[in-house]
Length: 201
Ligand SMILES: Cc1cc2nc3c(=O)[nH]c(=O)nc-3n(C[C@H](O)[C@H](O)[C@H](O)COP(=O)(O)O)c2cc1C
Image (tube, rainbow, N blue to C red; front, side, top):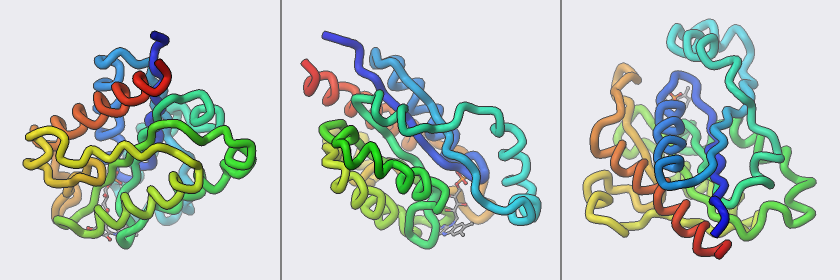
């Protein structure tokens, strides 16, 4: 069986979704996949970034990381998309990336792959599920296969999000990932790699 190709494509302002993406990439590698970890380009004006110390710091720390391209999605057998929750919706930065994929969509190059999503919000619930469902609208249009985690493992009863994986950053927007979220991220990566492997077998 050929090695599964996993793309982890994310946007993050202040580092939370970036930390989730890194964990997914590592879990994907541990599961035997070849992994591309890719950040989508920042679109916010410099004044907006500069107004938030955590955002400025994260932007500077990660600005040289490889940027997502359409080829990363075409290349992959499985794709995990990550975005902070923005008013219960997908961030404009990730949406902009999705909106550049029209040429690949029209050629059917985004279909028949395994997809799932992950997100973070400041408050509990806070729009996490609506963000993931909004993300999945696009995947339906791709003809993608959404591998939502559901409650396919007892650990999903702890994190409680059957639509994907999510984290609550809390009032200071800096709560680190806990054991529950880390386990849910590992489970998501293992699951999409396993399903993509079965599909390509
Ligand atoms: C414009 C904007 C809208 C946001 N909307 C929500 C929201 O609807 N619900 C919520 O709980 N948090 C909301 N937040 C907080 C972010 O979701 C949180 O800061 C983010 O998940 C942190 O991820 P990051 O560190 O990867 O950027 C919002 C933040 C911004 C800047």
